Length: 218
Image (cartoon, rainbow, N blue to C red):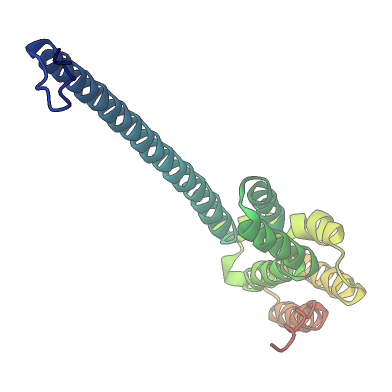
């Protein structure tokens, strides 16, 4: 009797072929799904990174713009001889600025406290006093404002800032002579003496101006 052996080279049936095609198609769909999921995740991550970068840039821009505006306000404030206004602007800068700007504001505030405040008041005092020594301007409204400002400096702002004893003496001498000259508007000699008192006041202010410390050599 002849034994029928299995044929190792037997061709697959149509059912096997269809099953194989189905599995291949299933794998292809699965691969496509994974690919599109990866693409979608990558797109989402890219958008998030871009949006975060834009947000950070906007935050930096807004912070820089705020600091610039405050700094401009401080620089504009320094155009007036009112150190207390400068100090308020600098304190705002200290609270709003980044580390570098904060260090600058702190150093500038120290400079104002140690030097610039009194220096500005001394310079304004000399400027105001120089407007009071001309007898031809006795009825000038500008002189009246300067006279009022001199009284403010004399009675309030210079004592508050800590004027030197030399400046105190010169201010008193100038004021006494000023009052005498205003009582004698046609007396040329009295007005000449007043000009001399102005020179003495100028010297006292110059010698009493605090010296700004030299920066250490690099």
